[in-house]
Amino acid sequence: MKSLLISAALVIGLVGISTSSAPASGPVVVKITGFAFSPATITITKGETVEWINEDDAPHTVTSNTGIFKSPTLNKGQSFRHTFATDGAFPYYCTFHRGMKATVDVK
Ligand SMILES: [Cu+2]
Image (tube, rainbow, N blue to C red; front, side, top):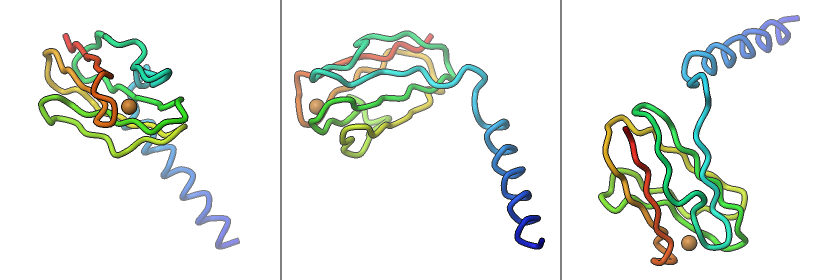
């Protein structure tokens, strides 16, 4: 009985966290596929979160040209998120494949 109460408390706690921190619309997804970011240019609203998902067999990174975000190495199926708090254009690339370039425009 005691463990049941603890489990219930944990579930309520998790629900509380997810409803208070998750934006209503969820992250904007950019896929990494075929050695490219897709779509390469996205426009989002300030405060939104972008989630990059690597669908390639090769490892990639999501690395800001100006250092404001920097993912670890993403293997197939792994993802990385960044929330953009200020407006502007944020170019980024993959450290393993310098030809992989893309931009997040925040309005
Ligand atoms: Cu890459």
